[in-house]
Image (cartoon, rainbow, N blue to C red; front, side):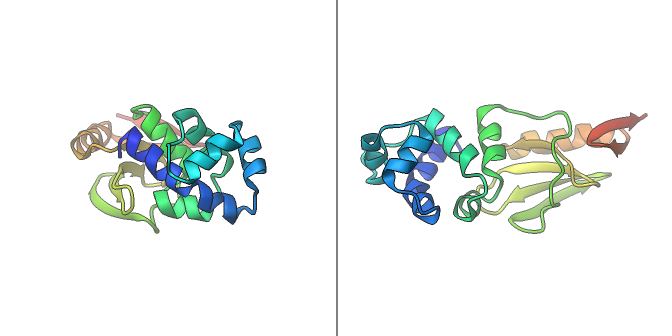
Amino acid sequence: MEKEDFINLISEKMKLVRTEQSFSQDKMSEILGISKKTLVQIEKRRTEANWTTVVAFCALFNHSQLLISSIGDNPVDFVQLIASKNGGTPKEKTMGGKIWWKEIESRGDFRLQQNLISNHYRILDQYDYRWHSSFDKEESLSRLNELQDMGNIEIDKGIGIYEE
């Protein structure tokens, strides 16, 4: 998913999340730091939210079930994925991909999964720590090979320790 597509998706969901949270337009615009007029324009789909508003919205409403089910992942993680092409160190511990994910490939202690909603990829280790996220399958497969070639891994408080 490209940044523009994500902005469009979040802009579409703003009114639904606002009503899910039982906020008035006045309250929601105050929370997001935008004018009520701008919020109305976004909700009526006359314009889209800007990137800063989308980031704030995802950070503030990251526990919204509507938002999570629309993205298929933690909204803040998704923003980070779009904002920067991350990839080389273990991130937070995940739930292992029981919901929203299908396993694409497994090599050694690592497995590549694809999100069923957004179609982005991630690599998890045997302890369910996320090591890589990308929208590019080939890049993810390449990173899976690199991680597998590094040797056995042990996780100590979320930090990888390599045995070569």
